[in-house]
Length: 240
Ligand SMILES: C[S@@+](CC[C@H](N)C(=O)[O-])C[C@H]1O[C@@H](n2cnc3c(N)ncnc32)[C@H](O)[C@@H]1O
Image (tube, rainbow, N blue to C red; front, side, top):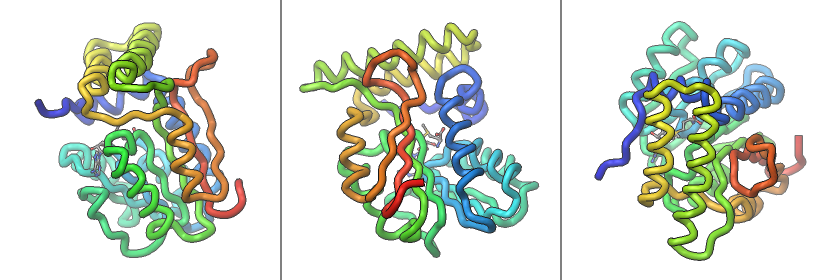
């Protein structure tokens, strides 16, 4: 069975009905505020390009490159970016194989790491720290975390806890059927082991291994639980 991916247009509309949209708005604001003038920004595993497009509108001085493996998403992203100038575009590549031409001031990777096996996640974080970001640069990761688990049976229960919470949130926000279907697919693909969501502490450990400063920001939900959507603001040296 192939992993189901929502169409690019449906993926984009998920931001209106899921807490991930609120998280992306916060990531956008962080980059708008902290990217240096005329800086170089990389959005790794960028999907259909919402972040790049909105960033290009707010910070016309930036050069922004996206990378994603999905042909449809890359076509959709470049179509929406065609009026933003030659400095803003998305490349289609496997993130493990992509070789950057130069280092970036800001690197962002949202909702992407959990698509990679655990060893692939560590390799990519290492590659970003060693080869992609400048030494005093800013790296922003964002991913969902699941509650602690001991074995495959409890992992399945933990992804069901998170997936069910997403579905309830989408219902509360009056999501249309195609977005609800995509939200159900998040739970289905996690349950069947297509994706590799992790516990909060495992993610923090991984980032702290490569960056001197790591700030975890919980964006959703407000109630007390370890699972939910997190932003990790990382720098090799001092914090923001
Ligand atoms: C959940 S989407 C995240 C999109 C966007 N960054 C966001 O936060 O909404 C994950 C993306 O990772 C991409 N992806 C998965 N494996 C990849 C790989 N090996 N190389 C590049 N992109 C990959 C998928 O095509 C998909 O667009």
